[in-house]
Amino acid sequence: MKKQILSLASVSVLCFAQVAVAEDINEIFKKVNDYAQAKNYTKALEELSWAQKELTKLHQTRLGELLPAEVNGFKGAEPEIQSALGFTNIERRYSQGEQEVKVSISGGSGGEGGLGGLAGLAKMGMMFGGAQPGVDQFRLDGRTAMLKNEGAPELTVFLESGSLLQITGNDRIDGPFLKKFAEGLKLAAVDSYLKGSS
Image 1 (cartoon, rainbow, N blue to C red):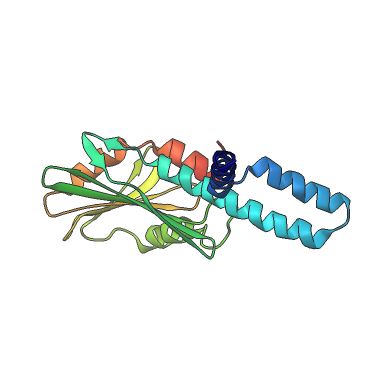
Image 2 (tube, rainbow, N blue to C red):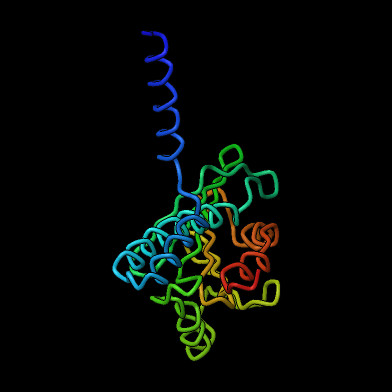
């Protein structure tokens, strides 16, 4: 009898652990639909907020996959993702020996609104500002880019999705290297996902 009780307790703990890990998004939407059909909109909205939380987790996981684990022989650390008020920032650091590169993508995405037009505003300011000393403007994979060569080099790519992609390096990295590093990123795929096209 004692063994049966322990076995039952073990099964209960296992089932609880599996439920606690994640909820099935389809089950949540089924609940939303059921409550909506029963005109219990309070519960439907409550379930919808849980669906949004689960979708945000999935979206953040996908964002982490956008920047590859390795670029031109540089190994990437775990991506860091922050989201607040419709603004998302993903950052991944890459290193090879004493060379270090940081890649970050900032802006709104996936209908989050917020600062989704960040790149558009920055790009417009750059175009109206004209040529600046120490700043090289060019196109990278069909997207407007700007390379600041004075001091620590910084490459900014204005994505069509409205987000900004920035690449910076430590004191062992120069501007031409950042350009080559950027070419190793799949900018079109990143941009396509952020636009909701993929």
